[in-house]
Image 1: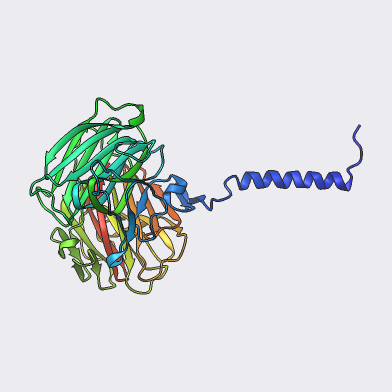
Image 2: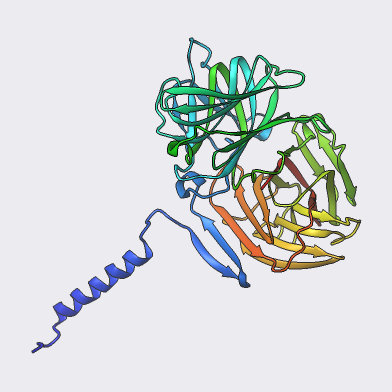
Length: 442
């Protein structure tokens, strides 16, 4: 037999219900992330609370303009610098003693098949490069599991495997023209199962022969080499890194490696065809800018075509921004022309307040989704933008170059035409600049 509900019992019940609700809604008290449906069931949008290291989300970007608090270092002397408005991460004492191999690591131990890329620079000594699938890192030579891809002062592009204290050399190729000190090289490492694809090009180089690459099947890869974080490393050397990105997915086994990196460091854009606008490349800032504010001004990179891809880069508004003005990247571009929507292809871009994905077709525009950014983008602030196209699904991710919350939107264009096309940059009624644009196949 139940007694009457007293005030004290009622209070207890209310408190218990409040605690339950709080537990349901604040399971992660540090997270400010959300997931929402946008416009129809084919769209999704999310924000991540902070840097990718906190959320273990891909894509990941570290420009070092906001420091390197999400990196853990093991040996060496590490510091960030921000010359010419973009960040760099330097290791300055790795050449002080024989066997020195300082490293810095970030990311998720559960990342499996992915692409990590960055610009790397050998300042002195022997080797500088990137680590993939890092696990169990600690100070000391080869003290981690994972893969090590690097350029060497002997003019080689090479790959090795670490297994917690031991090292096995896997592959080497000659780099035409060699490797020079104080020169930026774009290095890409793609891991898929036990296949590792490595490519290298001099930043700013274009045309046939600009990329040196190989794919290696590692018959000795074990469980500890199947997943892990990413890292930066030197061996008996000092060096620097910038524009580190990690995107989900990697090459299938059959296609040959084909990566592309912006030529704007040379102050030229020889492979770009422009349609409207006034476009200039600046060698000092390594940017490509449209100084006009035409509707749908665009520049299309014509040296190669892409099907499934990951495109990463940064965009900046060069005039007061607004909700109805935007800039971004086109993928699978065909039939381009002068005019607002004169191309066939897809678009991922940002306005001052939103992340946008959509489709151009025969002079028309279909907006798939527009989701709020974590913060308003002012004039002059660089934003990192990733556009991924896999099958009929386009995914765009935006984050301030200096770090902060990440916003992602995705849409599946059912029944789409998967014909390969070019990539490009586009502005809508606002002058804008682009930099550190890179494309890798999926």
